[in-house]
Amino acid sequence: MVVDVLLLKAGVVIGAMALLFVALTVAGFLARWGIRFRLVGISSFTMLLALACMAFALSYEDRQTVPGAVNTPIVFDNSRGLITAAPQEPLPVAAIAPTLQQLALNQARRPQSAANGQVIVRLRQVEPTDEAGVSRPRLLGEARLPLGGQLEDIQLLILSPT
Image 1: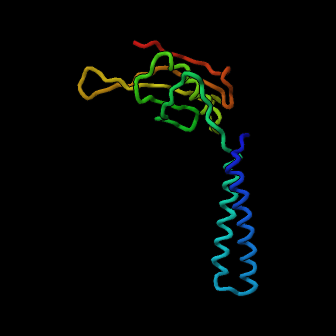
Image 2: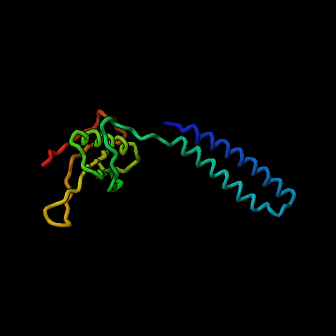
Image 3: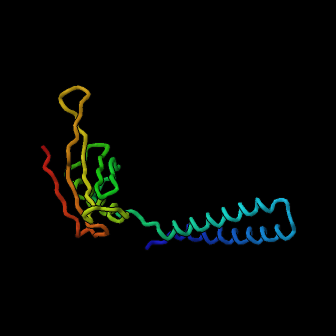
């Protein structure tokens, strides 16, 4: 569990402000201020904001990096353990394995309902064909990793370029 210190401090400070607003709300009801019902909304929203900051601070995890990997956007995710990523530019052959490993590590930590308990990450590239305006996807490789697994648990399948 990684704790983001800045968000945790912000949550504590906002929580203290929420307690101040609760005290003002109680005082408003006792003194019958006209703003008392607005203070209820202000104090409840501030409490919600404080809890959200602290929850995000406790649940935040940095993305893992693998040396030699290229950051590629995810173009398909079925939320059941199948993820497809596609690099924007042609990917060097030496960067395919580290990129697959990095994608698999970062996706295996997400809570998913993988049917077989594995995350399957596919890396594909879109290539132009001989026909004008027509392209086709080409699979570069695939990585399989059990949910919550480590770098050593990754099974790679790298397809040879043709």
